[in-house]
Image 1: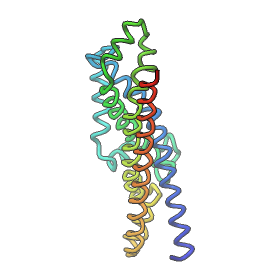
Image 2 (image 1 turned 90 degrees about the horizontal axis):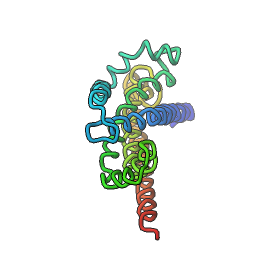
Image 3 (image 1 turned 30 degrees about the vertical axis):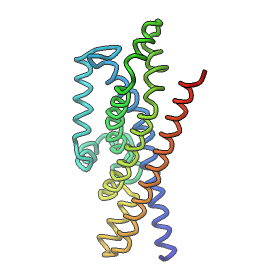
Image 4 (image 1 turned 135 degrees about the vertical axis):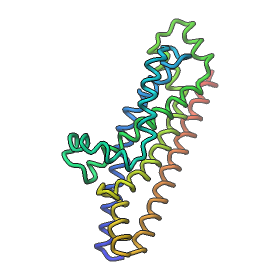
Length: 225
């Protein structure tokens, strides 16, 4: 591999890392509170509000059910408003974040549902406020599941970022299309695929280790005298 091609791969990987990292971070910041809202406002939640829950749920489902390539095109006006352009790595972060936030929300909602209802009832019996139940019972107990959900989200964003490259989003996907497909260089396409596979494996392995660590820490805290 020539030094020029190596530089292209390195720059493209950094762009992919930037897209996945920033969209994952912003998606988590938006998605985790949204997931909490979905959980606490359902019929059996601590703040039941079925109509509000249904409205938010429908919105989340609408975004999640939209294929990412269509979502990218649909939000082009908003992308231009936020990023000043509809192409490039920075612009791709906008639709990636929009795709990530509802995905995170549903995974967080699912993790919160796994929290033992007895713990919530015990906290309510001791006079804990709703905010205290969320901050000191729901989120800490569901934390391993939330971390697992964020790992799944990052892995999905790697694939989405490659699709973003097909429409000028930059990153490894763009490199694979421009050189591997349009210039008939199959070795470049193969290298892009291998790098993406290795990247996904790394993200998944780190996420799994973090889940095990926080799970063991939580179990140690519960069994401590």
